Length: 470
Image (tube, rainbow, N blue to C red; front, side, top):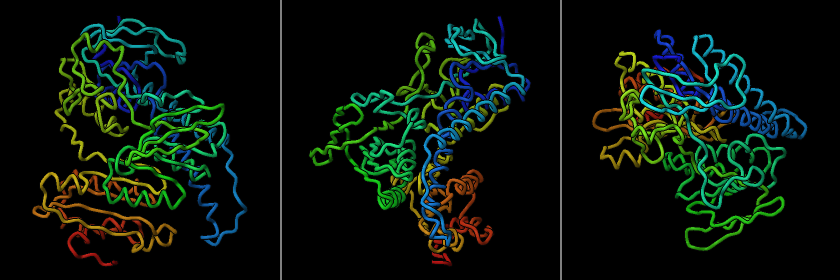
């Protein structure tokens, strides 16, 4: 029977990062996987979705080539080629994860894992084992990390059928562009696919049960996003829900109930259900071991520890925010805690969120509404992209950087951005928050010119009445 210092169930961003960090610390590590090497993120999530969005972005720019003084014939979208590129990148990323695990001498076990007792895992054989992976069997480990991720949430009446009603799996591999698309849910997954298909020419309607699009974002940023989406031709229905779906041979008629109680029928060729995800907690033996669950995910402290000694959980299965970078950091903290390195517990307020729609949205920390509810006296700065020379030169003058400070201490409480490439800029504010930087230090930071990042500096200055270019 193989014995490990750490056995990890799941090879997604949390699992494989935890495995590599554990191997770096000299621990004997094994990883169990049952479906996708690297998990959902590189195979069916973050990376291939960004490949699709990049294709849509290129298509958009070619359509607007005349705005840049470029003559181009009317472009056409080759859906098969777009999907092929995305799937090729997914395969490359998955193979890369496998290479890194093997390079770090991590044992790879293919099968379905169940924790039968503290320190004991039974792996049931399943088909599809990659070459060179260890066979299923019984394993022992001093520490077990559950990193099984999450799957699409299914609502009654919106059950995916892989033909007319899609989850993100089917949304990534369309055989053709739907002329009419209904997207249910406007979180990151829903709005990214809505943006992708709209940019390529589909008629897109988004139905959101909450009172704003992208419900977790700052209200002001969400309102700007909604205006941009609608300007691009997207139809958005807020405080609305799909009451029923009637399926035809190759189309769906959705009855949508609006806030005032009236109902509206929407006919679509395809429906994307993007109403969130749920943790993969089933069939792991958690209930029998007494592992505490919290709203469908595993309850943990800031270092991945569950209420049962020797059993840990990281990533989506350990609860929100369900983001790959949160899982990676959790994996590192969890392993370092097991190894006795005393890492700092994770501060979830310092985890950035990025949505790669058109325009991009990125944020970290408290929204203005949340900060007020927490009792802070605020100084809020705003700087629009139209005041930034680089953004105007790029042809991307529509955007905003919003910063929120504690008026008493100068502490940065939150930052919220919308516009071109803001997902690449948000890390500057994340670093500032991690280092407990004050507004004064940010004001005295020299930003390079001309860059879009100067909007970040100006937003800080604006919070204190010192903005220059507005």
